[in-house]
Image (cartoon, rainbow, N blue to C red; front, side, top):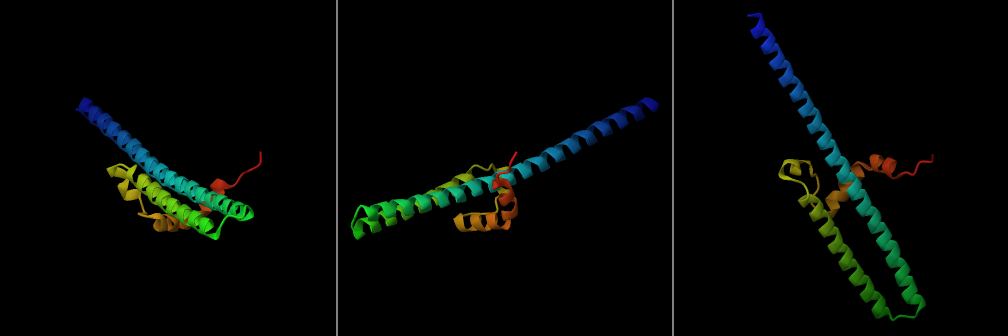
Length: 134
């Protein structure tokens, strides 16, 4: 009887240990997916900011070179179309990259909802993007 109790205790302990490790791994995976989403969205929003700076500089250079108003407008329209396509493609690829198991963690479906999601977690992103001295 004692050996059976020892065996059952060992099996119960083993299963409990495996379950706890699995739950910790699952929790860590969920947190990693959430953080990677935020970092990706932060990088995308920062790239949009840099694209707009570049466009402003390019428009100013076109005006300095006496380009026609028509050319400047055409450039702005083309730039806005490219940026819109880039935003849609980036968000769709980010959503597509999640496996079925992690699809429930995606809380956005387009650029606007992604930026709303990023704004709700802006404290973490500000802390992440800050450059700290050594």
